[in-house]
Length: 248
Image (cartoon, rainbow, N blue to C red):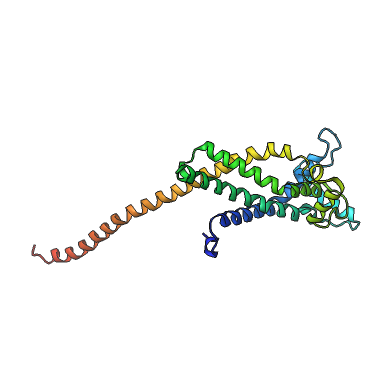
């Protein structure tokens, strides 16, 4: 409703809302994502592992960055290394997922002559899988840049900007072996993940809409009863004084 008040309609609303939601999620959870990447990088079976657990990593990473730069300060910004590359990739990724998902449901509904709530679960899952597939193909290079910046432990900056990183990787490693390395494995993770949670998003949205409609219906039903009760009370106030004047 807020985006519609700005004159946005249809796919533009879905793209913008999805992008804003993705950016918000990244900003709130990014330190945990960075810690996950660092923990995955270290050797799990080594006794002298650098980080014992998530909380240990959250404390040590800012301290390590201070030692690496030579000033010994605790640098909280180290927990946000690579966040710009993540936002640049996550905003269009989340936006494209929602836009493609809603567009495919609408197109199939019109093709088959069905309303959105009449689409089968298999159709919803298939639309979710295809929307995730299309979105990940577009933004995967930024995911490669994000992982490299997150796992880099040097004192300086690995790349100046995400776009400088992409240009450097293409020049040094190529497109298929650089920017899109590991894309097939990413399909295995992303496609079923998006298919499931986009379908669950639909289920939760339908439940919330139905719940709101039920509440509105209950409110409308209660209004005539409330008005009738108030009218009876008003009538009683008018009748009682008259009866009180009758002789005993």
